[in-house]
Length: 117
Image 1 (cartoon, helix red, strand yellow):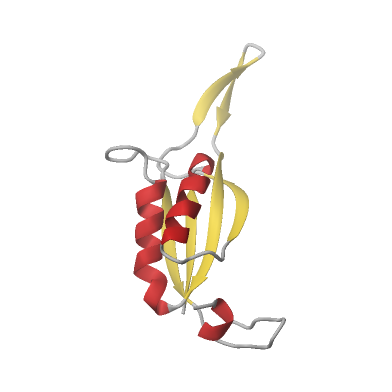
Image 2 (cartoon, one colour):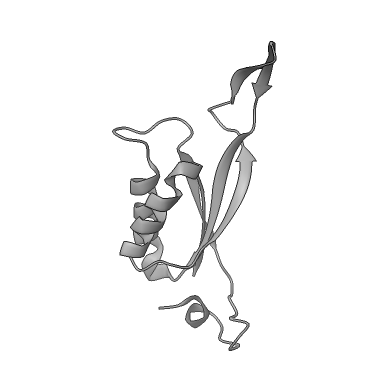
C-alpha cells in the first residue's frame, strides 16, 4: 500500500479527478494549501503599493492506493495536472510514501481491503 500526496494547481482538480476515475481510483482527500517552490511567487500592486506574494494557492491530494494502482494513479495525475505542451513551473509535485496500515472504521477491515479494490 502507498500514500500518494500530490500538490497541484487548483484549476486542474476536475481534470485530475476525471483521469483518476478512468483508472478506477476514486478515494481521495483534498485540502486547500499554500506554498512556494521554484515559482517563488509574484509581485502585485495593491492601492499603489507593491506586495510580494510568496505563498501561492495549491491543492493537496492524499490518495491511498494498493500497490497495483500506484503507477496508474501517478500517470493520471501527471497527464491531467501538467500545463499544455511541456508544462510550466508550478504545475506541482507528487510524493509516494509507504503506508504501513489502513483501517476502515465502519467495518474494521485492515490493509488493502480497507482501501478498496
